Length: 248
Length: 246
Image 1: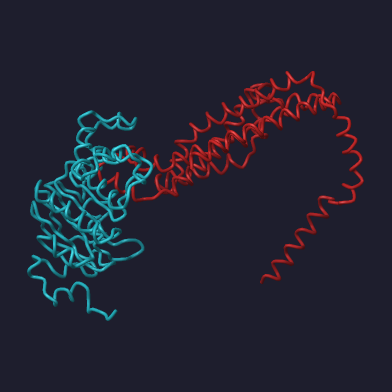
Image 2 (image 1 turned 90 degrees about the horizontal axis):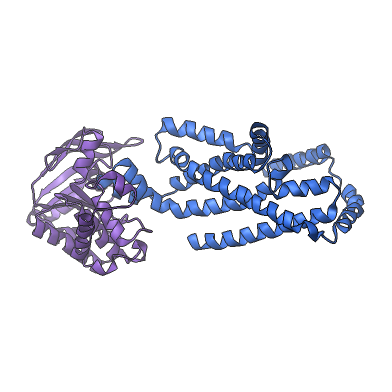
């Protein structure tokens, strides 16, 4: 589902964020990318849909080349890749439903969408996705009047509205408290199970990663330092990913 | 360092006082003349009230039409001169054009347009458009540069086109600011438009200047009072609306 070969990302001025990653992810996998902050998790995820421009290497998602794609091809690849962010990244002043409808932008005719018009079928789909995350009753509310956990659920609905084959989630629970963390991870797990969606989620919390992932990928200094099932995680692996535990 | 700065500051102030012939005593000696001027203005000649009101309405119209036209024209310019939206080959020339046109005041544009299209309110409208378009574009572009990048990333990630990203990721963030800037410009333009009449570009200023030239001070004071009321009313309405936007 996701093929990554020799991926390298150098951020200006000269920070090597991703330093040669090769990875193949199969359909239906729930991959958690583990690593300390600064290990390259975010940059790696953002390179998968080219929100960050890779310096070298190849990425393809769902059989479509992401790297080297012309703008129109890139958009076609992106609309199959949902993305969820740490800060939710909703348009605050827009309604909840409008935020979810934004997930349809890659599919609808561009001109009517610029006038704010969406086909009835897309509106219905957006409402369905909102119901899926349990927020149908908040459709008309302004996005910034929602709590953090609710906003992240809206963001999930927006990603689902794309009809994606892959969902990337960059630290989706880092801004939320523990109760909401399990709620959000639970929703991600269930869409992974029900729809067979491939999930790639970055996390810095080991416990959360172990509880939900079918596969863990540890990153350290932009390189893969572990790749295996949760059962294979040993103290040595934890040390390889996080470094020696320091006394608090 | 600070002592040197203070010294330089004092020298500059002293020099400007010398050069402009600033002398408080001259102002004090002139006070009786100002008092005499004010006395001659009273009471206001209410016979010219209808004419003055007509002029004031025309001034508001000049400012309104000019500001609304400029608000629309400034939109593409604002996006083209925002660092985070436009590519550098577009951004730098656009910024330069904005700074160039913005350095000339509305009144100077009015002189140019009166020469070009003749006397009346129309050159006034053109002058307001010329100045306001570039000054609003500058404000727009700064608002665009101040947006949160997060929603833009999110919309981009859905596979949206560049225009869709502007419409759904950028515009909702900046629209309230834009409207607030437009209202603020409308307020300042009404004040600017009152003097446009002095150079023949229509409105209340034309009446005010005519009465002063005819040494008809009571009539001039009516025009002045109407101007004050007009500005106060527009400011009050506009600031109420602006408070709601933010």
